[in-house]
Image 1 (spheres, helix red, strand yellow):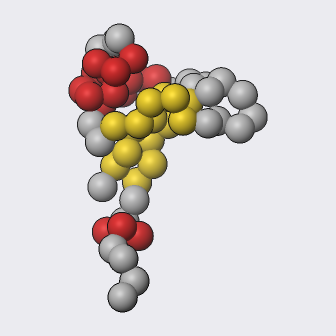
Image 2 (image 1 turned 120 degrees about the vertical axis):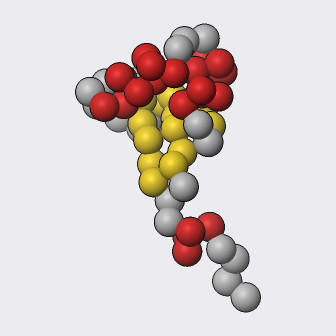
Length: 61
């Protein structure tokens, strides 16, 4: 699963907006999905994509 994020533009990179798709994130921050993809692929400050493995999302029982 991929998580797309708009983060603060500082050393902490705190999440400002978090979404499961670039389209949802784009709507949240007022831009286009293409801009989100471009910013992430060019490693622009303030943008991030994190890949979470399915084993990380399961609860330990």
